Length: 148
Image (cartoon, rainbow, N blue to C red):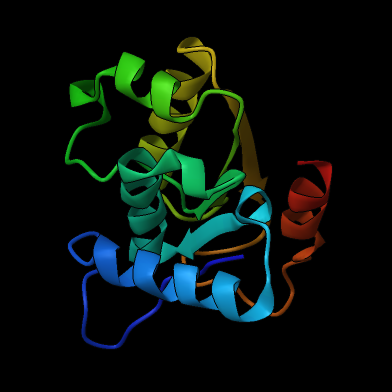
């Protein structure tokens, strides 16, 4: 699993750095690139979408919580580009029930992916706000990865 994280970098703009780290980890530990799952949360949920489109062959699945296209308006996204990049890959689009700022964008992203024929899973985290608490049953993430 690759979870881009940084205190001072924007991973949407630093995709090459993420791929260098991924390739080094796979080389050092003998991992299978077909079993790498890409994930991100909050603004970091945007980065996996950008990374997946730039090099989809590196990842088995895409998980964003919240998961959304890295654009201002999901209506601006060409669904055929995403359908091609995500062909035969599953996408998890999660959002907190009380995250009113992100929810419309995540729902729009899920709907656009599903309409384009991409396997898109939408999950709303009951009782949660934007910052997920320890009360969240994170097994929903692992269940998704285990099925793919």
